[in-house]
Image (tube, rainbow, N blue to C red; front, side, top):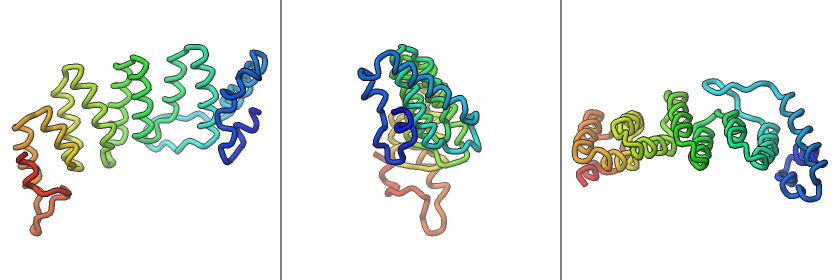
Length: 203
């Protein structure tokens, strides 16, 4: 069963350890876990951050299996560590941060989310991650820090969603700053990269 779950290319046996847990019993589950840990230890070490390669299907399946056992043990830190193994995209950082928040680990959630923004700062900002960070900071009473992240993202890739967040936290002052920023980027043909009529900013 373990070979089928980890070796099937079509996902037919995904989650097999969960589905057959009662049939496997404690002895079977112990062996399943031993096989998963042994397979995991044979995989090359992965380091988060810039230049990291995408995870293979082997990692995904083994993480799913090991997460089943960590959840069964009530080991939240092990579950977080498994998810932290894959930080190859902003989406991975968001999933990791959302999981931390769901487990009541708000500080850890913010730390990972801000790390994700820093790691991928050279690319187009991921709105979901930016808004996640802004939400946590605003709820923690750190509105200035939240606005700083939002402005960095807005200046790089203006969007109506970013503007709405800035308007909510910064009021009329945010509107004026956004207008000035977009006006300064107007070229001879009146384009800014902003996909909406400029008069939206007066609302």
